[in-house]
Image (cartoon, rainbow, N blue to C red; front, side, top):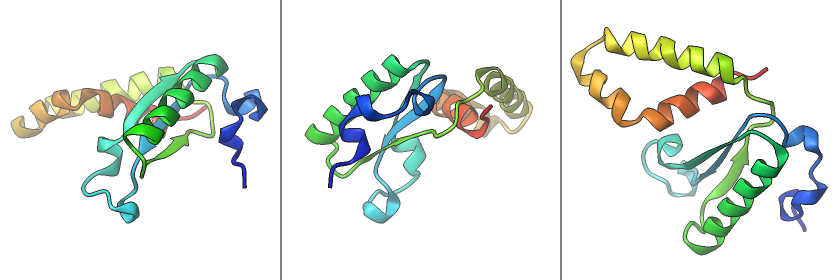
Length: 122
């Protein structure tokens, strides 16, 4: 059975255009240990062409070095302005929290922003 993702040109633009998160990750039930979201490869696309390029890049990784991983993409367009605001809120909350978490937040900054982006859609 052929998957829709095998022919990217057949995917309608309303599923690929706009700001979207695309991930390559291995699920816990497929043998991944620890935080699946933190260990995945994440990309952000701004338009259909970028989305297709990112999916092709992740497909190549999946075929070569990440065979047990799966590609996931956000269904709805993400709201970058809201994601930035949420990131700043979390950053301030973290900066005035305990000192241990202060450094962890900044060591993992890409994952923190991606998380903010994926929580908020238009």
